[in-house]
Image (cartoon, rainbow, N blue to C red; front, side, top):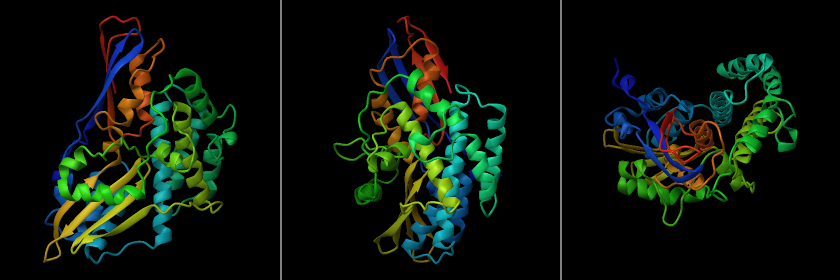
Length: 360
């Protein structure tokens, strides 16, 4: 068995101290494996993109794309798809990843009707081939209420409409204000710190005086939409599903460029990709024989689930209603789009008694 096949993807753990129905403290820790990119060192550059795709179960195409662009910027001669084909493939991955995550995280609270359940695999199947089956994708998303692109277009009674209704009425308000979005303007500072501090920065990234977050809500904030509360954060993800579908059907092309790449110095390149879950950074260096000498990856989850970062700040001090506190926290944490399993630990209860609950 290949070494990479035995790697545990790890998890993030959200620990909550609940007192009299209020979150007295929220801490986040990561148990994700470190230094996975060292598996690339010593390899020929043309082997790395596919290895990156196989190593990361979620957003594998984004990882492969970042690897290819970073290695090209470092000086490797790598073939790849034409820009339009690459853009379409990344849009398809964004749609598929968002749809899967939404179904996994939310269908327990907001069940799918029979026709809606059938629409999910139909949509994913339409995205699975080398070419998107737009004729099948449109009706499948329409059955879920995801064919529109603006909040006014989420059809009342549809699964999308019911999801947003649940998020508005059944979930507590988050504590954090307007997101501090990570963007292309931050790439220079992020890459300088990644180059200087290596895996230590990749494991615990930060920018002075800031708590950046990334993903759909952050991208919505960059566009001027205040995606701060649960329904708005969820709507930002649903809007990206609709926008990706409109792009793939040729109705409305996506505006943003999903990939940025360049060279830090001779033999060292970088790439930043707007993945479904946020901005991903790769840094690659080649040796004199044109093999990989150094490789670093900074994933979006490390920003959103940093200790004291956006997820922890949003949960601190909020009031949890009656019912299942672990389930509520888990759904709120899912709005920060982790790329690995998120486990929740809750100490205390709505009544203030000392009790520990766990969920995943």
